[in-house]
Amino acid sequence: MSSKLVLKSIWSNGSCTYAITFKKMSSEDKREVEQLADKAGYTRNDDVWAPPRVVRGVSEFFHAMNKAGFCLEFDDPEDAPFDLQQLHLTADTRGALEWLGNFELYHLSGWAPVQAEGRLDGHHFYFRARGSYWRFELGGNERQTRSPRWWYEESWPSVTGFEAGYMTDEDAVCCILKAIDFYRNGDNRRFMPEHPEYERTILVGWSIGALSLHTAMIRLAISGHEVLRRMQELKIELPYTADRELKYVGGLPVRLIKPIAGR
Image (cartoon, rainbow, N blue to C red; front, side):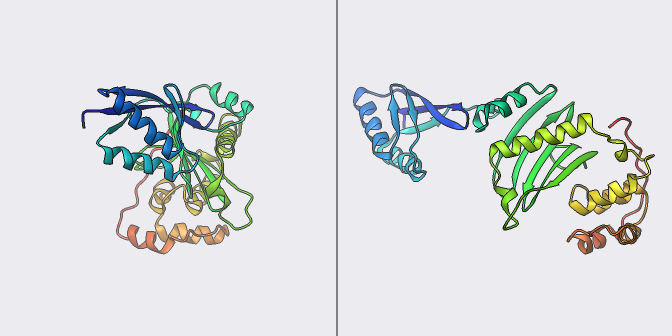
């Protein structure tokens, strides 16, 4: 397959078109490829093609190209920065996102859950929306081997209990911006060990899934059973993973963790 069609994505407010380059193709090959694209539903404007409105048209085109002996290649480097134009946003939300300092978005994608990752003020962040809640976590890492040091969770208007997992780009970015505003301008002292609400904060963190039981034990320097006892005293809901996590940490030693200065 020496003849090749190269497609480079061009994003504009959530809509994608492709800049087309023909490599090692004769005039006859080009005409054949263009006919295959027309049949699949692509809208061609010189060297810029808009994909079919019907999703299956894309796969049909790929299959037809392969069957005809042509190679397809996407010119989208894996290490390229996330293009914010991939997101469908209002002008105000896009402006707020683009002007945000010390912020980088690695991706925003998926359904049930909707997820995003990036960096804020030098710390890794993770956003997740599923069911009837969304949560923003700050201070973990991409491999999720480090627990966050700060988080914010909020319920999402839901009739069926699943709407959060299908929120739009606009809604997800607005949630992220809201959490960032709380982090930068709110009172975060309850996340510090010396604060009187620190214990409750950590216990709630386990309850909502921001922390594991093991991490809660480490940060509070108490046993797993003591965590459960204090949760019951404070009337904080146990996560559905409580029994499984308690069995896992049963043989693990309790150790202190040195608090990190600042947020």
